[in-house]
Length: 145
Image (cartoon, rainbow, N blue to C red; front, side):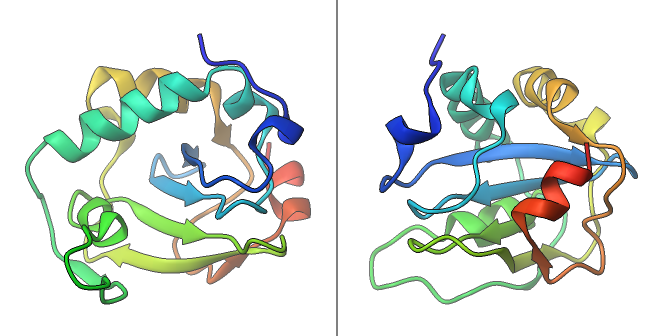
């Protein structure tokens, strides 16, 4: 189990998954300063394994938009959007998560690998919808549970 504290991950980039009230899924990238929910901090390794499992699957849609990667870098945000997930990125200095990639057709959590379903079952924002959001603040995420 990869339990960590917010202090442990501060300044380092970590990715985590969460679900919303519609059964859609998003990848969140902390960029070293983004808010990390407690449910993610309890098992950061499970989130890393879940993301690998999602990326190992085939694309199911196209990305409506995604940033261009730096030369020779893999565009993880585009790859998850092609698998039906939204992607939000934070900033090294904190602030809200900003939408950086979105799928043409969002996938339902039930169509993801078991490793992803397991972490999303623990980290779902039952009062939030990812569709139509361009930013999600720490307050949004705390209230969304």
